Amino acid sequence: MGSFSLAGKVAIVTGGASGLGYQFVIQLLENGVKGVTLVDISTKNGNIAFQEFQAKYGKDRVLFVHADITKFEDFEYVFKQTLSTFHNIDILINNAGVLCDGQWNREIDVNVKGPINGMILGLENYLPKYKSGDEGVIVNISSIAGVQPFGGIPVYTATKFFVHGVTAAWGTPANYNRSKIRVVGICPGVTKTPMIEIASDGILSPVYKELLDLEVAQCPIQNPDVVALSLVNVIQRGPSGTMWVVEGGEPPYKFELPDRNKLPKVLLP
Image (cartoon, rainbow, N blue to C red; front, side, top):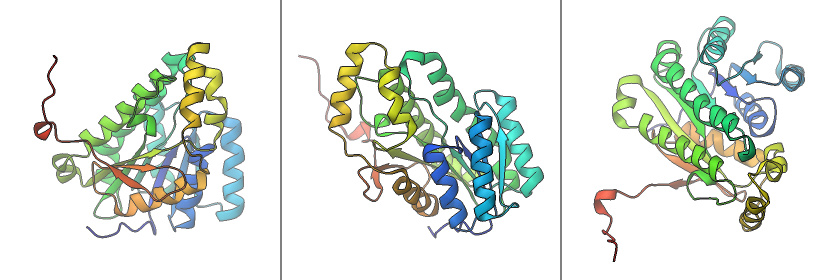
């Protein structure tokens, strides 16, 4: 598989006004995309980021759309506005997420319904029809909590395992062959973002806070720009259906589920 060129492409980044999403927008622009639509539920943060990107990269390369990705019609509005402005869509980054088990209904809505809406709109409709090249790319942002259990944040862990499953299922060869859309995933480790800073305030109870503090203390911490650099690499070279862990500032490495048919069978005593 050759390298996917970002030059001249158009991308949508959900949760693009802060944290990892903000850094993703920067790296896409730095690597020559024609345009980026940053999507955020915060009008204030979105407008600030939009103005900053316009000032640095030009007024014709960035679009801000206020939207709630948990609402299908909101998310579709994002695609329509992107087409109206940039005339094609090649890349979707399903990045927006919530880490707050204390508000688990909202957490499930954003972390589960959001990516589903993005996948159905992106892979089943807009990217196959409006991509500018031979293939498009969808990147789903999971977490190391999507490849190992974190007892302090069980609901968040469940949602990120879900994102892992979505990536693997929609990234199968059969789905790629019919759509020519690669679906890949990234599992960032503990990263210095506003989400991590408020995580301990959104736990289910003090018992879970103790568990989470112990679990996070065992993880290396990285800066968000490192994850954004890895994102570009995965967009360019990651095979469809693969999941890539980015942890401790190291290069991304592939996480692969074992073939259940080849696993030794461990029976109950």
